[in-house]
Picture (cartoon, one colour):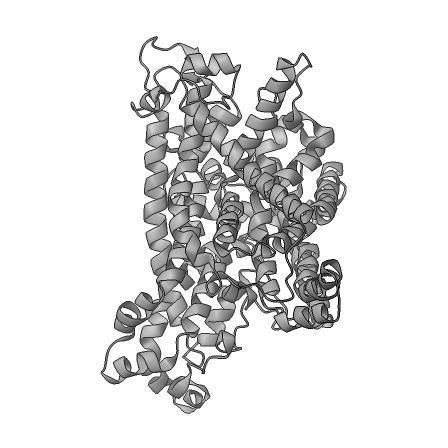
Amino acid sequence: MPDRVTVVSPPDAGPVGGLPSPTGPRGKRARRHPLRARLRRDWQLLLMTVPAIGLLLLFHYVPLLGNVIAFQDYSPYVGIKESPWVGLSNFQWLMLDASFWDATLNTLTITAFQLVFYFPIPIMLAILLDSVVRPRLRLFIQGIVYMPHFFSWVLVVTLFQQMFGGAGLLAQILRDHGWSGIDIMTNPDTFIVLVTAESVWKDAGWGTIIFLAALAAINPNLYEAAAVDGASRWRRMWHITLPGLRPVFVLLLILRLGDALNVGFEQFFLQRDAVGRDAAEVLDTFVYWRTLLTGEWSYGAAAGLVKGVTGLILILIANKVAHRFGEQGIYKRS
Amino acid sequence: MTMPVWAERPTRAGASVKGLVLALIVAGVLFPIYMVVLTSLSTQEAVSAAGGLVTVPGELSLAAYRELFAGGVVTRSIGVSLGVTVVGTSLSLTVTVLAAYGLSRPGSLLHRPLLFLVLLTFLFGPGMIPSYLLVSSLGLIDTYWALILPTAVTAFNLVVMRAFFMNIPDEVTDSARIDGASEFRILWRIVLPMSKGVTAVIGLFYAVGYWNAFFNATLYLNDSSKWPLQVVLRQFVLQGQSMFVGQTGETAIGGQVMPPSLAIQMAIVSLALIPVLVIYPFVQKHFTKGVIIGAVKG
């Protein structure tokens, strides 16, 4: 089990920020108490965790077991117990399925494209925001750029459609000037640019948060010393700001690579029909369309399992690499 | 604010380029929203005069909203979305606060295995197909609980909240404990009042999640009369499907099919947008360091 994988805050690193440990009499010494005494002391705390743990067990761990249907020829009419076992044949079919590989290729292409054209934007935006000196103005701009993160994908895609779709503002303006209208929303050739633009609009602002925190942690004396030594604005950025951001950058980059099979589901689900499968089918949409529309439950579960297990391995590798770079392992949900 | 000596004033060209870029970014976020809301508030004549989406305010009217709120699909879907959001957020927040507090004391009984159970959910999602089969075998298909229970606890939110609780020094709660107060009482009377900011932010995360939930609804609800607003938005705006006259509340030509007018479509978009716009500023101030950053950085 991946006991070194640390999730956001290290499980047993104690309090964040170096405050005194809240363990007190409940710290390590507590372990010497017999079980009964600990139960008498902690039963209320245990009781508090019951609803959440119950929900996670039921809706997270039970379905995890449900993945066994990937090894069956599952039929909803007879259920998991009665469905025949077929070994790995679903996986064999999957490996021979050209549309599965197309979806995989699309997913990886989009990930690679977004690494180049999405990933650097929050950093640049964070440096730009950080350079806004007036606090009120800065807070205002931050408030604006964080906002689209809280819009649904349906809303974001709809807004893009209204701007760039066949009946959208851009086409409207073009037609007013005698050109023919264009419909960016249905063009498979530019789809990858479109989805990246949507992601930038929605999440690049929110993505600055972690870089702004890293920028705030840079010791201002460094800037002062560099300025005294005659370093220009750009040289200070190159030699102080960017190295200060390096640890966060490396970490997020590695984690994004570990998350390479996830490009977001709803965004593609919503636009798949408009641009067609060739451009917009990614692994998650493949699972959905293959199963829920054709009733091939076991086949879809097998595809989902392959994606899940590959993703898990990638994340564990990414985390190992992060440790190699001397970074603390984090898993951040996208 | 005094400028540090080393931060010399930027050149005029540099400052104006920076200002221009920032203005463009802000406009890029706000303009589509402005255009959609303005179109939803325009009369049919103003929409026709603009040749579609309205960018310069013309004649304004609330007709689109009056029509949508006269009863019908959209009114009902707003009710569904609001109900799911309110019930779901209350449930999620309660369950998350309780568990975050219950797991905030290392060394307590079963602390490590339970925490591990929570953290492990980060690494491996349950998968779409098995989740569907579970929800279906629990008999939750076509019920609103299918939109709430599967996503009721998010490990991320739980961990953020727990990190915050762990930062509260023990001395604060010790005296109450010596006085014999129960843990529930300590949580309610001492810890929660100290954690208003983080509770507001986590509440916003959950609420936005429920309000925006779209795919769960398409997956688990076959009955279109139960659809939440996001699904209706997709159906009638993104896919431009025709509404039966009467579905919008209009009763003039019974049974005749026609696509909703642009103003009505944009009013549906605005209705999906506005609750986020309204709540967001109140919570935004808590995003500042300490809450999210402290937790995200770990």
